[in-house]
Image (cartoon, rainbow, N blue to C red; front, side):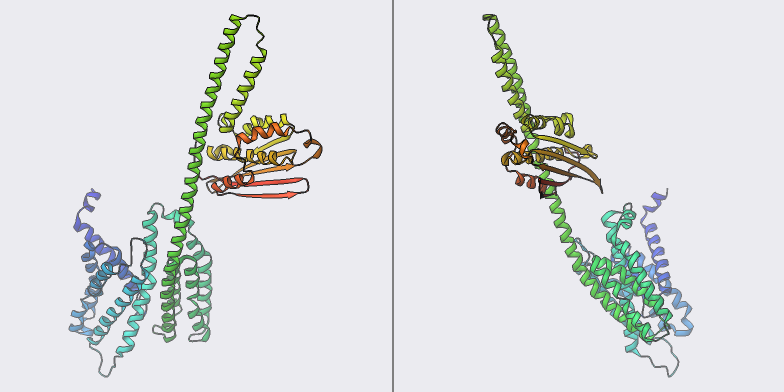
Length: 532
């Protein structure tokens, strides 16, 4: 029933009028002529709310001025009361409409801070004319001289500073909501560096300056210096977080200066407000450029991540093609084995006394070579038995031990959470390191350490290959047989291939030489989730 009532247009207009009227009345009570934060609420509402609800906004804005005209009719005259019924919304609505159509502060790609500042300045001048004319229409005591110049300046700085206090902050919140939605807003606020730095660093500094200014005597040099120093957090936040930082810091600094005001129309406070307004305008413009640069940098980082993901997918596709070729070669091996067994069976039938041990030995050697070649194309043992077993007891490990090299492997960490593509890449890197040793023939001991870690939702794998040389053992290594097999199963590029494979996974390679050998360390980051 409530949903059906909300679908009626007049109900929505009444709710908008009442909500805006109450909010505007609250902020109007907190405003003074040189700090009109109610004008910031007005500009924010007319900028964000669709045109179809503008009549409701005008009605909500009119309610307060109807009451004010009725209450002050006897004191300030009928002419002023009638003119006062034209609320500021009637003056500013055409201007804001023109700004939204021609110079929109809220763009499709981001916030147009220049348009916002231009709208704030034009709106300040327009409302200053309205305020000066309203004062001149009042019935004032004889002999009372109205200073139109001072009055206009007070209205301009008050409206402009009020807009800078409220509107950029509202637009920053609107930007955060449109980007992540209301449901994720709390998480974004909790993880926001802007909120953290503003709360833990900006607010304590402003609180200290506020305490220092309030403790100082009125109109003293210390109070004036503190009022001017209020714009320093605005500069710092703007340089750190762009226009959003300037919006947050400017709103807090403006409120702090208002709290330090010793009298309602203190000249020194107004001067400080002028400086802060200038600083906020400058920092908003500079912060807008910084936000643009940050957006470009974030886009570049996104492009880099996309390039890494694409490269890893290409690696995955290439490994799958090698896997198919390996499976085909394994099927060929089984076919050759079946054909050879059938041929020997027929030979035994024709010549029962035939000695076929030589043929069987050659057949086993050929099948073993085909199996090694298939395993070199794609290590089936990595998928079937897992990476730790493939590295410890796989074909490469057995071949190294048969050739006379001392080989060992130690694997720790949640390696099962790593994508299949990265697991195969780790296997390839170890093979490339072995191939490099075989090409140089300068090491006798190979010890592989693999550590898997998980942080911030990403898995990292550290591969540490310790190579040690013992001259006595090196002389008994069958390098020729070992090198012939390794050349067929690796790229043959050695350390260069290791660096290239690591770079695809945002990793880095480091080689450290010591007296007995060298250590190759490779760090790999997993981007592809579930790359099986």
